[in-house]
Amino acid sequence: MLRELLSILRSDDPLGAMGEEFRRMLNLTYDMTMLAGEIYFGKKPSPEERSHIYQEDRQVNILERKIRKLVVAHLSVPSNRASVPYCLILMSLVKDVERLGDYAKNLSEVVDIYPDPLPDDDNVRELQEIRVGVERSFQSAYEVFATSDREKALELILAGRELAHRTDALLTKVAQGPYDAGTATALVLGARYYKRIGGHVLNVLSSVVMPVHKVDYYDEKEVASEPPESSR
Image 1 (cartoon, rainbow, N blue to C red):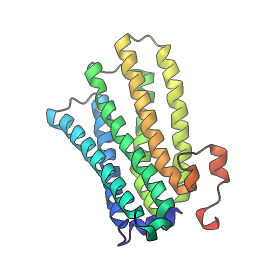
Image 2: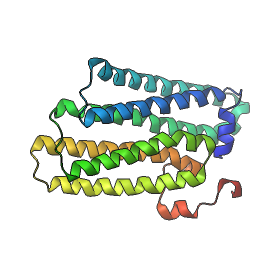
Image 3: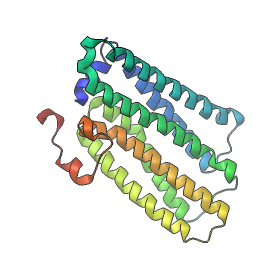
Image 4: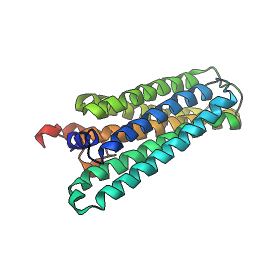
């Protein structure tokens, strides 16, 4: 299914225009996530940098609407009905990418609530490690998607699941820590936003290993039992 979708997205078919737009969405949200992480962990953003995140978020929203419009127009032609499964996957993926932009923007806004430096302690260092893991997964996501690299997708999905578990454990530590209300709020928000960013990246990766009706679903046992696409 994914290989066929990629073939369509790379073709001269009207759906082919969506491949470039989807790539642009991923690149924009990746850039937003990287800059938002720098701001969250202490970089003093210039007004231009803050404005840049909002401008990119607007571009992501425009691209999402453009792809949706192209899908609807494509499916309005009776002879294109065979493309329905691929269009369903694409509609799901663009929503995940749009949410990536929202969470990156939210992450950059935590400094508006808590402008002080984050504490230098084990919990913040753990959050930094989670950040690095999420960013690495995000950086690899488009290449894995574009090449239909099932083995790499599985590797990243399992690593992402572990990061999500670590984030849940970190929230418990923060709740039990010696933090004032402002610091605790900043740490909880940062952890939750990184968990959600990681989760939506995993949804994109799940399209490489799961059939259309199970995209966004990546239980370890289910993922491990799924045969390679070529055998379906």
